Length: 515
Image (cartoon, rainbow, N blue to C red; front, top):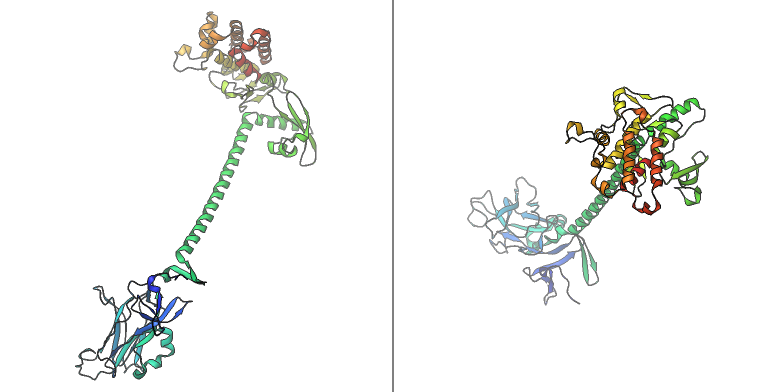
């Protein structure tokens, strides 16, 4: 079986006396191995001074563990000094200029009742030299010329448990041996290894740095997951808030406040209560517009059967097409006429199928049929605003007609309602257009592409309609219902042969009027 070891200096050999030892560490004799504490038990030499039947003036260097994976264990060893009036200490690194006194203690037989002392040693000491001195003598213990009789003294580094349990055995010099038991710990692996487990023919150790890496990895993973979940949750909350604000904005822009005002006024005069439902409530009532809930389908949308939270059965219509002639409807077909008050090209939205919607009802007002809307604050967009409304502060249905005439004019000319680069007389597109029409030069204001590719009769008809919408006197303008009817009539008047080449200006104008 192949030999397993963590370091070559840990290889155990045996000699002829069947005595295990570490060959590469001065043939250190092995007494035993404590697997639990990872301590190697061996023998360490004793230093004697002035002792009979011992090598006189002998200082024996202990095991040098420098460069090996072992060290003298601070937890398991002690420096012990025996003798009277003796000071014993350790010099670390005896062969190095950086030598320092690592540990020491003194024995004073006058003060102490025993002739010994012991002290701890520095952590993971690898080499040392024991020195013994007689402080009360005129010379040290090694000169042999003291003025006072010197008694036998000796010192050694020994296993702590053995020393504490058998300290009296070391007092009798006659029973002292040349070496004493000591424990060697691993200077490298003790700091790295958490636990080691023996396996058949080998071993396995768990290293502290690996355990720390695992803990750090798990902690980092959990932290990253928490941050990810927190970020995702925050993203969802911000998105929901953004969606709520967006819906509130669209609700205001598309007549929601006006509808609430109308509902409130209706509830004051009618006992029946009118309810407003949001999209979530309608989706819940119809099981998210489930196809199994469809009651019928028509040109304007699909009708679903729904059940409200209170158990009432309702019909929910989901529109799929924009109502034709929306402005005409607001002015004429609604039970209470509604004036938009801010008709302009940016408030007319077109989807990918060229279906139009009127947007931004923030300034809209509902007015009785026999009334006009008088306000102290004129609102609208310059360039689209009815001059008559601007002068009198009186808004009528013809004011929306004027604004729509400007939208038609934008399509005809490809210009903005107000130009800051033109001369003062030419800044207003509507004023310039009226002037061109009166001078019979209407083709000069047209967009070049429309003038080149469009049908002359259709262009002239639309231009005449725009001119009537821009009349300075409101009562002389057509109604929105008349405008819608006239544009629809222009479309029908086109022959089948050229219907595939319908001029862009006419189609765009028809789309906007359908909004």
